[in-house]
Length: 97
Image 1 (cartoon, one colour):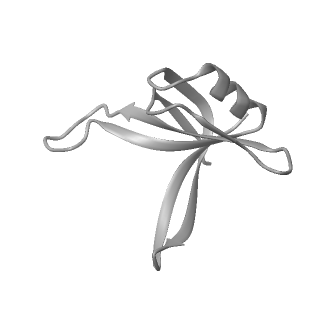
Image 2 (image 1 turned 135 degrees about the vertical axis):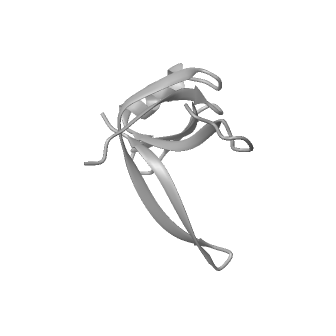
Image 3 (image 1 turned 180 degrees about the vertical axis):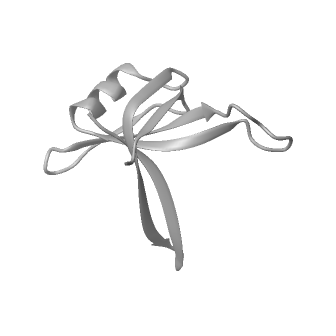
């Protein structure tokens, strides 16, 4: 089972992209405060999120930098890509309907 719930604040305004097919995608990052912080460690985690379709349009229309957001239904998605000849990994929260 792959369920994610996040609550935090948007680090920047969501970015909406529209593809040739008409599909819409929004990217945004959520800063989630850690409940326990050790000395020298950051006090927040920054989680990149992806959302598709009508929900992407709504998030871009009604949310902006600094606003609190609650994602009640999401899943973690990993991907790999190559940059400068090095293999990179990314972890994103895919926001579900």
